[in-house]
Image 1: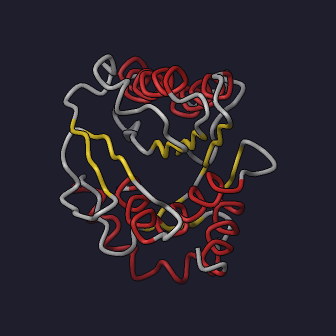
Image 2 (image 1 turned 90 degrees about the vertical axis):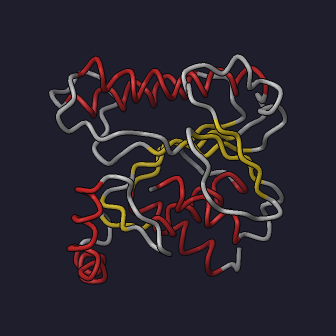
Length: 218
């Protein structure tokens, strides 16, 4: 859901010259500046080094909910999955800016009680140690899908269908805890383009950068 939202913002941004997507299935979108790689095994990048050379930015949006998952399984689908891509990119495109979608409440100490927060914190810390040009950790709170973006998870689609009409109210009452796929995508593009003063971006910074990008006409 987040990846598709970010992709739509990249397609609409005139300053983004070309886009390469990587996923287990095609996006179903067609655009002159869009090229897609379909890879069944996203833990193995041995055949992808050449296509991934010379990139300016990576918007890493893959992830799963921790609901009902044991820590070992969540670790594999969060830390291992992310690092497989990041280590390949650090090798073939060290000049890249790596933008990682983490989450509000992530635990940088890796010692807290909340399992998902520890694993996300471990992932953030490992990314920041890699020799990228820069790496930024995006920590959104509640993310409202926009522009027709839908979650692949049935339960989430029901959840968003119920809460969607209330998004303007949540945004008004809790502006530092609510964002959208649109604002998140714009903020990631803005950071890739201009950088940021710190590697961690909480929901407040995400919204501010997303709105700034929109106001600047992207």
